[in-house]
Length: 307
Image 1: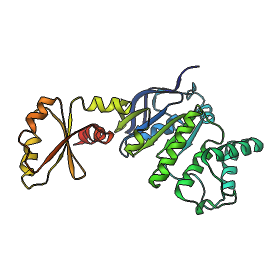
Image 2: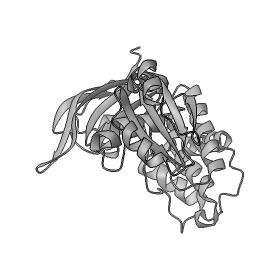
Image 3: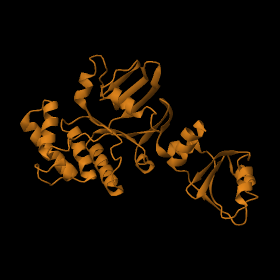
Image 4: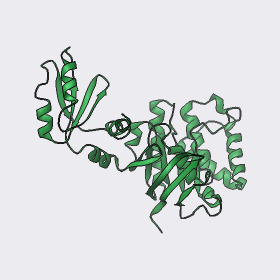
């Protein structure tokens, strides 16, 4: 069996004169957690909708589980599960009614749908009655039920579009534990997120900006590529910091200099450049060598380009 769950080559889509996704190419291995990272409007959701067979690309090609768009995406829709950004269950229906409706849309046999529902309830640890109104459930549990609805037909590939947006940190952690369980069952998961701590849990990340794929790799590979040299965290306490910052921004070998909360992160091409640039550091300031984070990568590759 081909190890690739997705193979995308030169995929683009235009809406009139606007290019939403511009000539992107990548592949995703079976059983992988693959993440899309980017600002709003970067093209992440549009890419996912094409790969789910919901939008037809303007140009390029994609194989999803070995299937293409020749039949209008109908074959793809049978083997993928899709959990959209907006909550996909109906608040005024019960849990049972929502899942019965989802099964009906997929034309699943009632006995099979019941069996899958019980399997998925065991997976997510749902123990409330089927008669529970969805509107009465906590946000984290609603998202888990939405995941169950997306997987009712036992898809090979699961697309999750910002699945933890707006839920509590504890619920986010629980949901990501479910994602790892799903891949442990042999499923492939493609997820978009705005949370850097979630992106760290992906096997590989595609970083998008303005419809284009600008970086691809594991979290560690992206960090090494964006920051080949050392990084320092600076904490300024005195008023003399302003003049030093102004000079540091012009220092030779400076790759990135950006605020991080109350501190600043300064990345350099090499240690010699860093030592020279920090030689006049005010006595009231402190400096510590740190490892770059995905947030640093995002600031450099996305926000830095826009600046």
